[in-house]
Length: 133
Image (cartoon, rainbow, N blue to C red; front, side, top):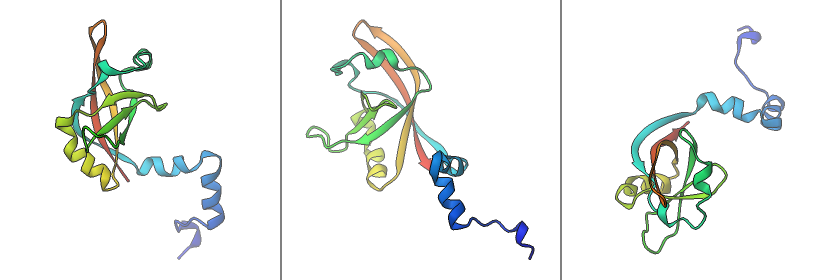
C-alpha cells in the first residue's frame, strides 16, 4: 500500500494539533448537537444580578451545569457563555436531563426566544441539545 494514501497522524503531528488552538479544528467536525427538547429558563425573576439579561440574545449558546441544591436534587443551572447565572431548567423538565448529565453526557442550550413580560420579568425560551462525539 502506498504510504502517501494512508490516513495516519504521528505523535509529533498530534501534539502540534493540540497546541495553538488546533485541537478544536480537529474535533469540531466530529461533534454533533442533537436537539432534545424546548423549554424555558426558570427563576429569571429571582436573579440577584439582572444586568445579565441586558447581554443575552437569541442564538446565544448557554452552559448547563448540575447543581447541589437542597430544594431540587436534580437541579440544572443555566449559565451564559461567560458563566453568569440565568436561572434553571424547570424542575418539571429536569429529570431526564439530570440523569444524562450524571451519566457523563454533555448538554448545552441555545436561546430561541426572549419575551419581556413585565418590567421585572423576561421569559427566556431555550432549546436543549445533547453534544455527541
